[in-house]
Length: 205
Image 1 (cartoon, rainbow, N blue to C red):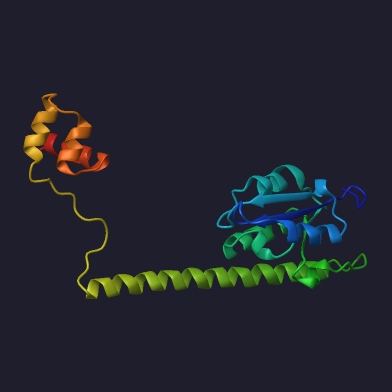
Image 2 (cartoon, rainbow, N blue to C red; image 1 turned 180 degrees about the vertical axis):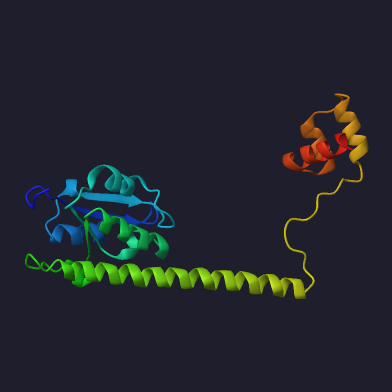
């Protein structure tokens, strides 16, 4: 793809439908973006399954194109996901410009593309390290929480499934067709899943 063929897209995201995209779009238009070049999502950044973003990645962006975003967290709130997306853009020859990271916005003379490569590699490495540190912190906190709970004598996990005191009576009526399953659940104070698990345990004894 030649420079003439390359295209620039702009991606804006907010986390909910109540929020508006005006500030991000205004910044894009100040850079010369046309409406048709701006792709938006009003969805959480907890994962990458967003209609606009997936359309960009899978149907619009091609090698040689440029994607402009306001900040890295517009891609995702998950640093591991951001790292993976940066690697995807790098591997597929897509330039990412991040307005809040001025170095990525600089236009360099031909032959100095290595500067962008260096910045991209640094971002990937730093984000990967941060993501790994966060995963380790979460695992450590979980382990500490479990140990603290055990020390206090708390039982972890779901409580064991037990038969209600009136189980045999209600079960017999239900099996005889005298009451419905819903009525049996109400009388035994059980949810649907628990009720049928108890039925299975009764019938497999």
